[in-house]
Image (cartoon, rainbow over all chains, first blue to last red; front, side, top):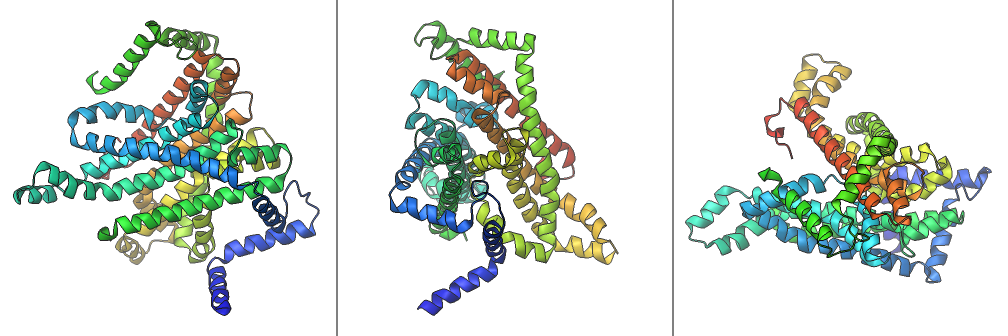
Length: 255
Length: 249
């Protein structure tokens, strides 16, 4: 049992030897040279700090708050973006309605609007959630729209020829056909939501991982900053994995 | 006119809401307040100095990441050793939200231009490298083989076959990076500067001047829009030989 997991770790390390190399170099350089620890702390002391903060329960509430905000915005984007994308793909009227909104809204950096939302909605959760909603809405909308547009006409004609009603075609052909594209949008939006939540928390918040990092850097507590970055990186990788897993489950027929 | 119907609808709604007195000026400033601030700012040149400060930061970082990212992506895809070395690094660091590194960069490089420049580069370079890498991997093997059998040197092979064939993919990454460079920049300016549009917004928020917030947001939105359009125009000119890339969106 032990030897098996040890062998797994060894094979992972030999495949990703560059990562191991960097961590080892980091540790030796910071331990042996006289780099002050507020400038670059050794890797092991960052891990110690992380463990300490997890153990005394300092970290988990911040993780919870950040995830709550990120997912709140993400799900709002999902709930509004996907139906809007389907409407856009199906009806001329909505296509003409959303097209200029996308042209102006999509390339716009959404973080610039956070101060306006803070002005309107206060510095609590709502302003961040709304910023993230705006950031996730556009990728989901655009990809759903492309998905609906790119459904193969032959499939629709075949379904029509077999006597399917428009409702059935929508449910059985359009939705599954657009699914792979929707997932592209969801993947992008997941990354955007995490990016925006940490960003928004750095600019104006009293809690959350982004605030924790900024607070740590104001205290010159670089170990805390690195520990926060590690958690954020872990969350980014973890969410990416989860999205891929969900995607593989839902799109199994598409492989 | 008809194409931008929803934008006009939005503007009309704004005018009606602010002039009918449904919402007070403190919450949603009227379009004339925002317009007059923009006009005064443009005449005195204050707005332009902020715009130039912001653009200088974001575009320099964006261009540097182009110059670094495209050769790196091509090298990574063509040289086996580099591929083995960097692929795991890229895969693990790609999903990290790069903004989180800002406090570190400020600590290491100071609060001035350098930390922002480096953060914009770090944020922009990933999509460019990833898309270039994937593009190079997708280049038709027969093109490479036929160029090699006709005696093309490595340099000619890269500049005449691999790079042009990868260009459509590179543009996908470049477009993402351009948006990221603006996003990172305005956010960074909100955290630690005395110049630029992001600073203008944050400062206006502290002074309770919603008209300035709206004016600055309008500038940011139009900058994002116009640079995106400029990029699409460049892509259309460069990829004339690829018919399917003709679409504007």
